[in-house]
Image (cartoon, rainbow, N blue to C red; front, side, top):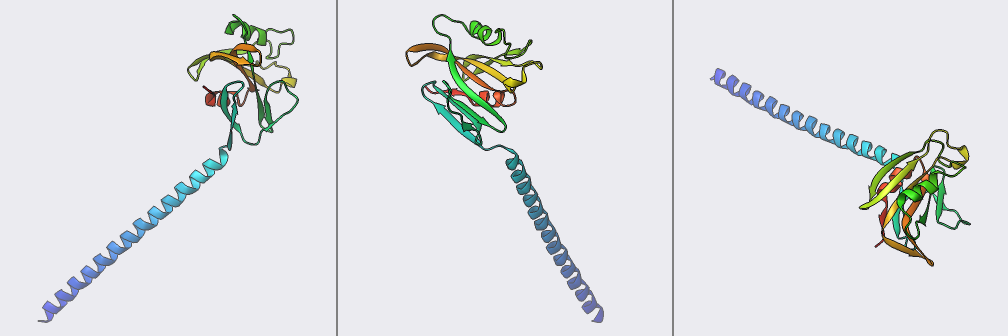
Length: 190
């Protein structure tokens, strides 16, 4: 009888130990999930703090919509829209009246005696909002007074009437560090 009691007590102790092990496993699993979730949340917050807040620029006259860093402010006194901030700048304009081609607009931008993009600017053909575009990046010998200015020329989907002139191309000037990000957000207002 005593041995039956001992064996029953031992079984009960085994069951109790198993229950405690399962509970401990559940607690460890729950703690791991909480730790992982907290780590993921902190990582996301850190990543988001490095992403600049973006502002939207819409200009119906030039028919353009784009995004830029929100700390940039408009600069007055220009015949075209210009925004600047501590991290760069952008401005928009239009070119290409009559039968002027994109290549001629590029030549006019690059081949002035002043050499605004340096002596060997890099030109890249792109597609922006399903339109033919060319990006001109300055060469290292660009004059420092240009503040790293690069230019993007994009063909309008349809010639754009601005004031009394009709233009074939949108011009986006921006600093070399931001022009590709701005260009990737550019769409035409249709």
